[in-house]
Image (cartoon, rainbow, N blue to C red):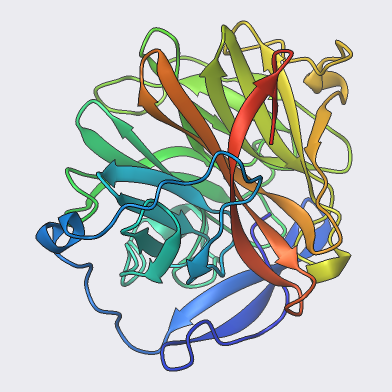
Length: 357
C-alpha cells in the first residue's frame, strides 16, 4: 500500500523518519511515515513566487532532473499557477511539498492536518494517530480537492475523506467529511487509494480500492462531491492491485495501477500497470485484449537497476485543449541511497494508442 523501508534524514535539521508495519490483505507491509520535529515555515507569498525563474521540464529526458525534498511515497502532483507546483504524499497529516520552478526543485511545506480529525476513528478506531494515506490533489470547478484515506493495519476498516480549498497557497482547507467507507466483516472492498477523475463530459468520478476486492469506480455528485449511484468493479488481480488513477486522452480512459510487492526497499517488486477503455466504467483491457477484471494488464514501468519498485503513481494533464501534455509522478526505491523512496517525474507520451515514457 503506502509504505517504505530505511531511515534517513530528509533535511538534517528538520525531520526524522520512523517506520511502522502495516498488514494489508494478509500481507505485512512497511509504512513510511514522516514526523516533523518542528513546524516548517509557511510557503512563500505568491508575489515572491512570481519572481522566480521558470525551468520548463525537458521533453527530451525520460526523468525530470529533480532536487530538494524528493523523499516521498505515493505522490500526487498539481500545478496551481504559473511556476508553482504542489505535491502531497502519504505521511503524518498529509505531507506537502512545493516547487517554484515548474516542478524541478522541491521544498517541504506545511502538512494539511496538524492533528487528526475527530471523525476518523469512527471508521478506523485503531489507526495510527494522524497517519494519512495516498492523497490525491485535483482541481475542479473553482476549488482544489484533496481526497485521502485513513485505515487500520491488516483490515479494511477504512474511510476516504475529503478536504477542499480555494487556494493551496492560502491553505484555507475545509473539512468536507467522509466520502466512502468500508468495514471489516461487512464490506469486501477497501475504501482507500482515492483518485478524482473528470470524464469527457466534465462529470466527476472517484476510483479507489486496494487488495481485498480490487479497484472500483463510482459517480460523484458535482455539488457535494459525494457518491451518486452504485460502484463498479473495474480491475482485480490475485496477489494485489492498488493505487488506481485514471486519465482521459485520445478517446480512451487509461487506468494506471500498482501491482506486486511494495514497501521493501530494494527488494520491492512493485510495477506500474495500465489498461484502457472507451468507457470510464470499463471494461478495461490490456494490449492483448485481456480484461483487467480477469487479471489482465500491460506493464508500463518495472523499474531499473537504480530505481526499484516504481508505483504509487499519479498522472497529471497540463496545458489547454488541443495542446495538452502529460506527466507521471511516482515513487521508486533508490538502490544508490539505501532504498530510500524517492519522487520521480517523467513526461508521458503515447505510441500506438498506449502510454510510454
